[in-house]
Image (cartoon, rainbow, N blue to C red; front, side, top):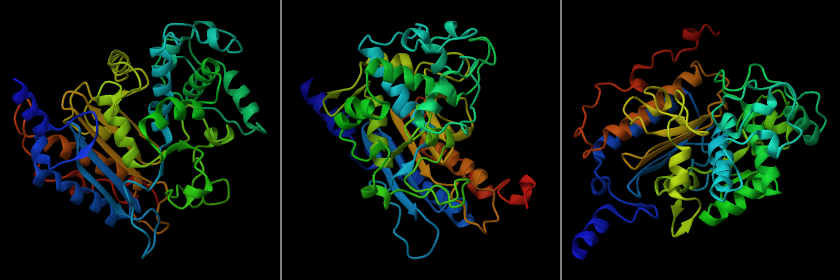
Length: 411
């Protein structure tokens, strides 16, 4: 019996710590995985984004880890490095920081999912706000709007007050509306319970304990050169690099519940493996496995607690299982985790940093490429319950449907 367990460990690896292994050792086809190259390079050659970082892992093994292109446009620039090039994760912040922090507090018994938000934020009041629960914020069913202008705020304190005072659009629980405001309010709840700012709390309780040295809010000047530029010509009047791209998060000082986190694909892979391990990595327990299961269980529609659920198509592709959960970020980032197949897929780009002369619609390129990467990873599994599935004759990146700007009615 002991020899059998040892053989299994050698064959499939210790799933507590990520290691690079040949795909065949974890039930994946090497030739199929190589199609990731084709999909991503099609996007690069079309001008959809200057570079990308892609990581695929299964059963505790990294089977694909590669940087493509450069972080910026031009010739002779340093290539994207999976372990050192940092990207603005945008809305991935909602799950990798805010929902993760909520898991920690829930696991410690300090946060109740069905408690009213006003229990933790007494200033969150007016109308039906007293009925809004923490669960409502996580499920995007609070009744809060998608966003709001913070142009009148002169500092982060005023921006915070404006967000807390935002009135509900509909009664809580009556409509699902993806809300950056709701994620920010959840961030304020976490800060109120923890007694410290969100960035410090997640760094102390999660990132530092996992050894993630390149996952953070507010990257300093020492890391600025390694951060992929996000946009050349934004309304702020100067190129954005190492500064949060989202305007609401910027108004809040760069630390917000809905955006502001930066990370490398390599660090994000460790976080993903921690989730697959049921809240543990390299002997460090972040949260209990029951907490991970609760927060990633499908609820109403296509949502879990903070996380999106794969419904087929989109950034998770067409073949991931129904228990798969993940999220995307506006800047061109995505993370998907399939617990049934013990697999994660990460794609980081900076498509917003579009080439000025590009004749493509970059968002269309990104959508097809990251869907292709998710499909290729899933279709590379050789020991799934249905055996190895047939690979399509063409990738979406091969067809390039809607990639031309004129297909979108743009000049």
